[in-house]
Image (tube, rainbow, N blue to C red):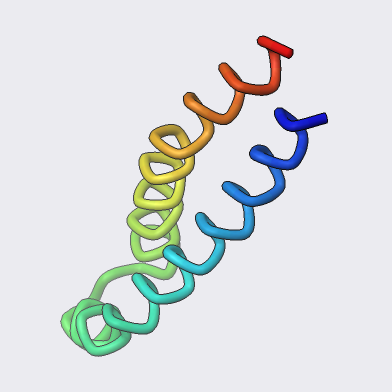
Length: 68
C-alpha cells in the first residue's frame, strides 16, 4: 500500500516538475520554432526531457512499490 502511494505521489510530483519545465522554456521553444525548428524536433526535445525526469523519479518509486 505504501508503495502505491509513493508511486502516485511521485507521478504527481513529476507532472508538476514537467509543467514548470515547459513553462520556463516557452521562450526557448518559441525561438527554436522561429529559427526553423520543425514541430517534431521541439516535441522530441520536450519528450526526451520528460523521459529523463520520469525515469529518475520512478526508479525509487518502483523500488518502494515492489518491496512491501
